[in-house]
Length: 341
Image (cartoon, rainbow, N blue to C red; front, side, top):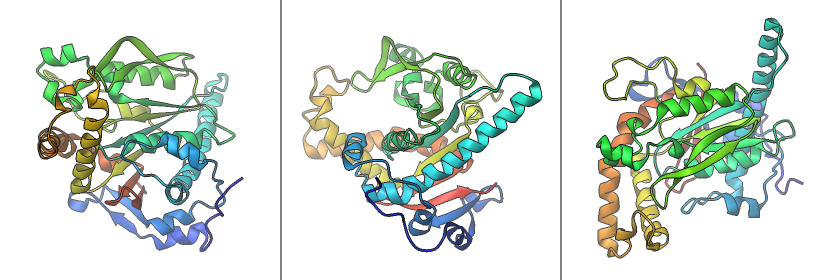
């Protein structure tokens, strides 16, 4: 049962009509056309999509500093879930057309959703809530979620290459392995394994793997999943195959830099009181920092690493996303941009 009533008011097509096309991004180029929806207009596009999450479900899915509410689910996630379901069914139908043309058995290939955005912007919580909602649709119950953290090079490799302070930058990932994972998944391979990353040890866990088995939908979440350029040392040619080639749909979680910085510092201070107190934590040496010093350390890490990565590598990929979710200072989504071209 849907504990909240369907959003009433103007029909969905009226909301879309009122939302004017918007040219967004650096320089507002002609190649970046979006329709911009205010939150209320986007919420009307929910139509009759049922609410299938309970408050207890949402509590289990929230991040350490994320305050996603049930109203956020109703206003933002349910219209997006409806859009994705429509897109999923169309993609599956188109795949069947190709199989028929080629004279092969109709297959069931995974629908892949890429989720991008800055450190601390709330990608992980967003992806978990989206996974839970999509898994409750009757026509795609198997929804897997993989983060790109597992595809980071192990610390020993990053140390050898002098990249420890550029962890999270495009060159710190094993992109070949990432592409192979997505290619195998998209091809319908029965069992595909992804490496496992430990945020406690700040490293890849040797000998462990996360298994993905024939999902209907795969959500692939990470900082640089929409990246296109050449980043590997010694390479001058753009790769012929990139991660986003395997995406059927892509979403960018966005916010002002000042808001993300504050969220990053808040998260650092919370982790200092919790995870960092574990002697096995890579950041255990930060556990006893006085509050002022802890804030200063968090701000330095943010500005010298994460902000740099955001400006150089992550934000420039925003205009490649099908949907951009613009968050306000309180973590709630205030605007949704839907790509038209």
